Length: 377
Image (cartoon, helix red, strand yellow):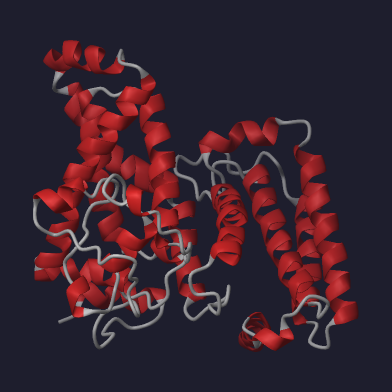
């Protein structure tokens, strides 16, 4: 039964373009489903803090307006679902959204708000919801207005896998942070004689610290990234990221968890150990997250005078290109300067790759198959 329901939802989400036009009920059905899922996740985050929420967002639940906001989301989801039921012959999205709305209301009435607050590590469902809503609201319109491949659908092939990667990296954000910061705290504890250096670094203006962090981490990321291309065992993990055959704002989420932990350990840990202010590190993390999403996006921005200064979508799209010339080029995350210095810069004027992925497409589809891919011969 569940399998049939999932297949029915999937089929309607991936309906042909001609069946998605405005007035067909498809848009209202998708919106209703998204809002109903968001409502359920936020409710679980609020009622089961410590299990389904991230500590950084706990002030959100203390707001007097939180309950009103949740009710608005539920009502909006219900009304959009009703619109789907009226306009569309296939009403599976609307019915599913209404079921989720009813489930959310039932949980809100019966779940004890004090349960399970003592858990040390939480699954950050709330962070996932806010992350996907804010990022989607920013980049989906950009891709629709300035898309390079205008025929590429919002729900393109393998979007479910990339959404699941997005979910994993979001709900385990606290666990991954604790895992990668543990070495940093150990280094700080055993390097008390660095106190003067740390104070000097932390006393700099915030904007200067952010720029310094960008240059230092980009230098490290360049060689980390290059190693994951040129060391065969490491390439198995990074190949998962390169297996995406379509580039859009969601494609950058496809990263093996081993690579995520390694990358954060090699970049964030030294910055903490050197003493950069937490506010500068938080600002950098926000900037690098938005930048990583932007450079993978399906946008046609091609500002030639910017290309020697900062990494642009066209620069990074060539890194993912299927062409022979695109192999092992453009490793930098922020500044093309490092690729120019070390001989890996490639940017043919006003050209984009003809396709994306890996020759022969050896990486299987599906999250768990891709998770196991690096460990197989």
